[in-house]
Image (cartoon, rainbow over all chains, first blue to last red; front, side, top):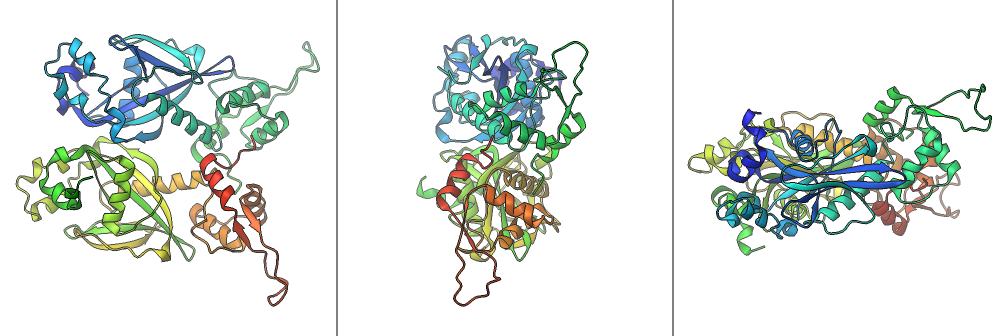
Length: 259
Length: 259
């Protein structure tokens, strides 16, 4: 990466197509868990009344994975987030809307219709699940707002971004079947009902308490803490913590290894 | 699609970049199950000593999913195969090898180094699991061979195609945790041990018989047939068939819905 890359906006507007991979973009679906709601982080363009996922383009000398992290950081100031690739959106019609035209015009680009970002793009979706309270999203220079939206109440999104979020949520739900979640979303020790709430929020439905407990404990990634009998009520629930070694092994190899 | 598209080779060589999405390709990992071995379908180029996945480019007016099916059909004559997208491979270095250069030269393309297919490409991997015996792979006009290779003995592949196959296999193994397989790989009625052999072959390990039976039956996608006591041995195993309605529902919604 050269220093020049720090001016991504300038590169995009006036740098020409040869700096970037033509026809491929990345979009990041950042899910946040807060008070029993699943939210997604969206940006509102300065010249666009619609909301959009944090997204951008890939430099010619940049791996796609690196581009996804850079784009997320530039557009929201969020760093250190593990992004998981989930789907490529490749329909012909997805970028027919030409939503960037007004933005190019207002930026003073000559002949916006033949600008490289007006061509057909396929986009690669990445998702992450983050702790809502730990992030302080800040919009970039071509956005006026950066805010959390309830995934169940999405309105007024550009292009196919609603569909991308829905597919991201569908992927997250499927991935729950073979990968652990929760490590960064809960305090060090927690009762099982708090973990159950996260699953219920993602799945969008209530779960049976004893089924949930049996299944989650069968994965062997939780350690139960001994109750402390000095002080608190005897009827307090058991507290658990993630066994990090087993948690990361399961992240790598998948849960459900009992085949 | 216009008729012109039938000459894909000509389009690629002499049609210019504007006909295709620049910088994006598709590659198909076709797994075949045969006699306890998992195989993958590979092509050998006429001008290349190495093997490659059936792959190709995306027309500007073609959805990426459509391109994957077309490419597979053109390069191997296989039709009607359900392809599942599994990963985008986007490293900068993946196409540095310029393996297409000799091919362009021999085809009489002027100035091969500036030909559009010599640029950086990201590729989208699709996989399918097919019944080995039902397919009769035929190479296309720029390949000399099209044949099955044992996934455990891959040698001499172009670019990152070995890595793509490995990732495809990893994806297939993970997907076994939430999606049914076997419908097109087994006769209408089969003993459970035949289905177990498919799982063992994909997972690359022996499974405990009673664990496997308990788990596979818990999915509720199999119907057990009554034993026919006229004729065959009383000790013959029960035969099962897939309940197609439940099977396709599980394909759509995922197994493991007992959360």
